[in-house]
Each structure stands twice: as C-alpha cells, then as structure tokens.
Length: 177
Image (cartoon, rainbow, N blue to C red; front, side, top):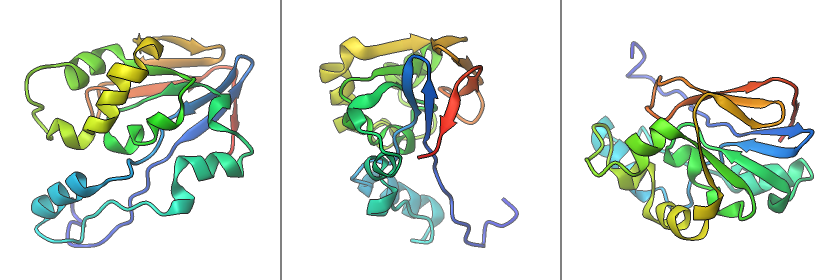
C-alpha cells in the first residue's frame, strides 16, 4: 500500500493448458457488466481512479480465437478464486466440467451468511450464479488437493481469498492464449 497514491495497471490472467486428456482453462475473465464492481471501487477509493475495464480483444473468447481454440474444445475450467474477474466468462464454456475449491464453494458460494469482504453480487454476479445452479449444475466438481485432469492438480491455498487454489502442472504443457 506504499504506492496507494499512484496508479498501477492491474491485469488478470487466464491460462490454457493442453493435457493428454484435453484442454483445461484456469479462469474465464471479467463479466460483461462491471457496474457493481466499479461502484464499489469508486466508493472504496473515493474516486474513479480505481476501475475495472476489459477491452474486446481481452475477452476470453478473443484470446482463445488467437490460440485457435473454440470454447467447446475446453474440457475443464478451473476457477481460482471465486471472484468476478475469474468467473465472468464461465457461460462461454457450456460443455466443460467446472472445478471449484470445495472449501471455497462452501465459504464463498453457498454460505448463507454475508461475506465478510464483499457483496456476493459483486464477486459472484447473479447471472453467473443462475448459470451455475441451473444450466451447469451437473458439471460442477468440488475439489480439494487432487488431480483434476491428467497432469493437472489443484491444492487449496487459502491465501488472498478463501477459494484460492494453486494449479500444479505435473505433465501438461502450457498452450499460449
């Protein structure tokens, strides 16, 4: 926080992995509607200096196109942590299994108590919640410290967010997106 009065660009990344079992994607990018997030940030920062934006070429669909990959080719989507900047493009992947931290699922997704940090509608937008619980329900996988695809393991870290996991590549090859 020593540079609080200075502007720094913050970037969020997704990673595409090619494994023997198929393609896996770590995180899906920001949602299309950033109104709630940016309203929160404006109030928190006291100005518009802190704001989420996404350009068309930064959207997950465009990144995959540049890598020559269609959304239906992705077999697994790993979400870490459960935040709007990791889950916003989830509806793009209508065939993939979706992996969440088991602990994070209970603490950040289905916990009836209010979040101690943010309004749930900010970090898990209603549109995405509806998709998860209605359309994608049979593809949700809750994981702890385990292999999610051949060559890819997850491990709960509990740092930064309660739903944060590390993704360990044991035999997979990273494919640039």
